[in-house]
Length: 128
Image (cartoon, rainbow, N blue to C red; front, side, top):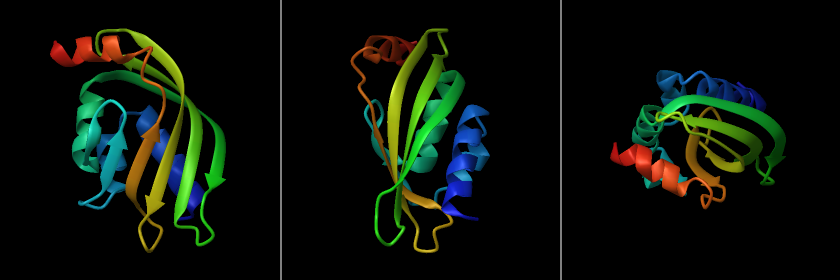
């Protein structure tokens, strides 16, 4: 699988809330660093994210190969996130992926976006 295929599969799995497919894209010790969820194991992160999500829709804007050796890639996309409480939030997001040595999985993901306009809604869903 090419890096482009892996990235497209990631967004498709995110949009369809396919937990098994997303988790398969990370090794068991994969890490996600998220502005809302903090740093945690990737498999646990996606389980929590999908538990808090009613629907996700992504629109890819740009793909950046961020390293000379092809070990990193960044996706810039529009994210429309419907929280379990029904609140819809829209924002641009950049996901920076570090690939495994064989470039077939993501070993680390750092998610970058401004949480100011959605923090209160997110906190409300998490406490329900």
